[in-house]
Each structure stands twice: as structure tokens, then as C-alpha cells.
Image 1: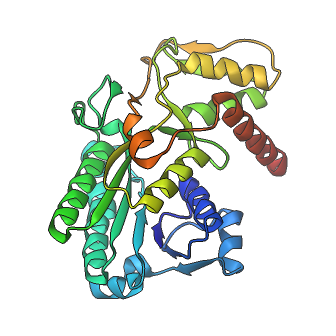
Image 2 (image 1 turned 60 degrees about the vertical axis):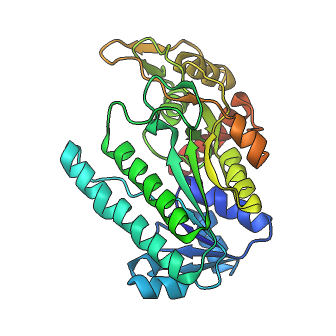
Amino acid sequence: MAVTGGGGFIGAHVLSHLLGAGAQVDLLGPTPLKRSSVRSLIQRGHVTYRPFALMADGHGLADILQGCDSLVHLRYRPPSTDRFWSRLGEGVNDNLLETVRLLDAAELAGVSHVCLASSARVYRPPALGVDEDGPVGGIPTPYTMVKLQQEDCLREWARQTRRAFAILRLATVYGPGETVDRAIPNFIRAVLSGRRPVVDGRGASLFDPIYVADVADAILCTLEKKADGTFNIGTGRGWPPRHVARLVIRICEAQGDVAENPAQPDRGGPVCNVTRALMVLGFKAATSLEAGLRAEIEWLRGRQLRMA
């Protein structure tokens, strides 16, 4: 089993799930090793780290992939600029072309199954109740444009090689280990610091938060079945950010209420039909929103204490 992006937020949880299922895992680098859990897995020999794998030429990468039955492609390098065309250029150079090289090497190495982490944000908004055959595109962003191209490349690889592929369109992933500037960790950091959590607009637009361990479980289900096709991975239930922020306040036993930011429009996200994942993968998200928030709150609280 080969994994890219295993040093990231989702990837670190995926590594643990794969090892728990008894898989032999090669982590293809370079990838950040800032997470102690990932460093520990490598140091103890539970994961074989190949730090220069993704820098190798096609045949060199194919040699590294020899003997791997499945490839899990999680890695996505964010751009360093805010300008649209520069972001798109970086996305193509850093992510799309890397995917092409990986697929070429996977064909040469005889990898029989490739699983790509995509995003439910590829759907045309408002994506409420949309299934995997729903319209994609709409308002383009560099991120969604590159993700759709990655998906197309994987489908063509599967067609030409007659091998299995899985595209997992992930909803909004949250949980312990999330360090980026997004709604749920922002709500939690604000409340833990004694401030009011701020929602864009009135915080009424729906989005679908899915706990990171559930996403790792979905990937494991996909690999175990060598599932073929495109799958929405979420809870299938939408929540307004205002509700989530208030739930954080209640769990933290804090005072006050949510603050609105009328200068920003309400921001939601896709809430997809997840029936296919249940029927084909046997996957259903198991973690309640409250339980998942409690876990992330405890992780961020511990992180704040360590940094104090």
C-alpha cells in the first residue's frame, strides 16, 4: 500500500487506520513530518518512509511502487499566492502534473487500484442533496478546476489500463489535528480564548462537517473492497455554521452568543447524497457532530496549553 500526503491532517489519520487494519504502508515523500504521531510511526518502523519518492523520475517512481497493490493519493499542495491565475498555475504544476506522473508510474508498476481524495466542492452550487452524477463546475476556483482535472486523469487511467479507481469527494472534514484557518477550528479557538465565535453573514447557509476518523474509515472501506467509481463522503446532513458555533459554546461551557459579520456573505458548502457510499462501500459516518467537536476542542485545548 502506498500513500501520498500521509503527513497531513487527513493523511495522519489514514495511516493509523491502515496500520490498524494490518496493511503494510509506504509513505511517499516529500511530505511534512511535523506531526509527532507520523514521526513515531516512521521511527518505530511501522511505516516505510520514502522521502524522495515523488521527486524521482517516472521509472524511479515505478520502481518504488513495485509490489504495491493500491495507491492512496491524498497529497495536495496549497498555492503560495492569492492571485487566481498564479494559484491555478501552481495547482497545475504542483498537483495535476504530479498526479499524471503518479498514474504513469502506477501503470508501469502494475498497481491495481488507485484512490484519489477529491472534494465535494467540485459540484455546481447550491449542491444540496446532489448525487455523484450531479453537475460539476459552476463558479470555478483554481482548487476545484485542478481537482476536476485530477478526477478526469484518473478515469482515463482506469479506462486505458482496465484497472479499478475510486474518487472520494469529501465534504468538510474536521477533527483533532486540524490546524488550518477554517470555520470549526476558528470557532473553537475563539471560544477557548474567551472571544465570541464569528460567522459570515448570519451563519445560516448549510454545510456538512464530517469527522476525520470517519473519512479515514471511508478510505479503508474503499481499499478493502477495491471499489470502483466516484463516491460522496459526508454525513449527508447539513448544519448552519451558527448552530455549530453555538454548540461549541455550549460544550466549552462558555458565556455569550455568536457574533455576525455582515460584511461577508453567508458561506455554506455541499451537502451531498451519500447513498452510493452506503450501498457500495458499506460506509456510513458514525461520529455525531457533538462527539466530533468535543474531540477537536480537547485537542485544541491541549495544544493551547502546550504553547502557553
